[in-house]
Picture 1 (tube, rainbow, N blue to C red):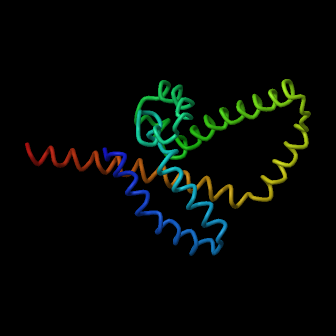
Picture 2: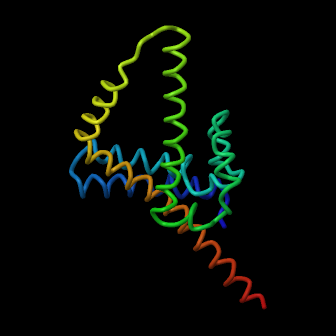
Picture 3: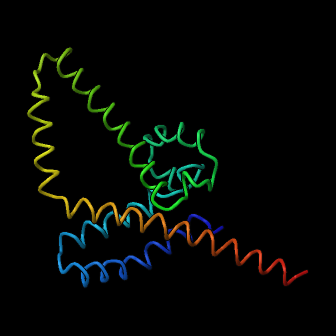
Length: 171
């Protein structure tokens, strides 16, 4: 299994190919930027190794505390953390729950403590409108997150195969 530094190098060295591929296929700067940014984020901070005390985990700084339950619940390299599509979706749902709790808590503080009234319904309508307007960018972000995670998982698999082959050659 490659080190965190190796995973970082793989992410950074493949980023130009991902960006050029996205630009050639989409012919859109916004889609290319969305996909490439998500790929970079996934490779450096949001990848499968959030299930252990890893470089990705440490990069969250104080916010790494939100990943403690995730680490405790998932076995390292399980299909739930490293599996295609499911790993990324599970991390997105997990982070989304934390974000929703933070938004609700901040809303309650603004409303109850500072007396600021919030238009929750209007905010949700605006989010829905923005969401429908930027569907292609959202899909590009999802693809970029998945590609970043898969580059990690594939390099783990190749590293394990290489180590096993070297072990067999020595015997």
